[in-house]
Length: 218
Ligand code: URA
Image 1 (tube, rainbow, N blue to C red):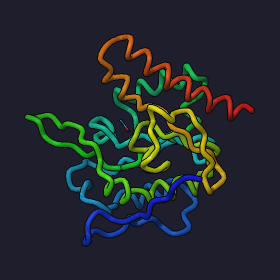
Image 2 (image 1 turned 90 degrees about the horizontal axis):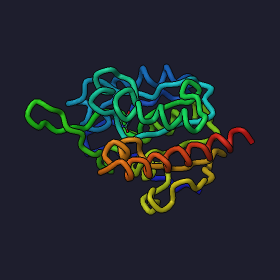
Image 3 (image 1 turned 60 degrees about the vertical axis):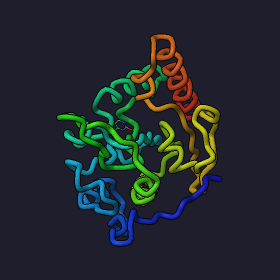
């Protein structure tokens, strides 16, 4: 079973995520999330970047948080990591247009370096504050498989003991009746030190996604 963390906001004064009770459409969740101030990240972000994809998706792909491009455009995985994800999905035989893509944290956390906005990893409080949105997306979509890409998403859904490098590709049954699996984050391919390391990471991502495709085709 998936470890469930309580969803506490990041600080005594911050309100809980304003998830509309009984929402039946992702569009209703996204509209409410546009005003989310459950942690402080909304202050420095351009906008909430909610999940994107059809309401009837059988697969949910969960990343870490929007990056610089996603923050400006307002959609998940539209920048360099998104292009890697597109390649990997295609190689694995999964049509991105039939998946729902989202993030564990829905605001861009960054720090200024000169004129650049540099990605800063979200903290446990940010993941927890945002968790009600992920739960609501899963409840509305009713997926068969949820794929955590990278440690942040895996930590949110599979608990802190889960190690992506060791445990990627495993399928874990969640209480809601769907399976949760984890793989490397597409950004790990962009960060790889050389071509061999890049290929090795890409192979992991494609193989893990191919296992999801095989499960869906069963
Ligand atoms: N990295 C993520 O985890 N999510 C995005 O949407 C973009 C980059």
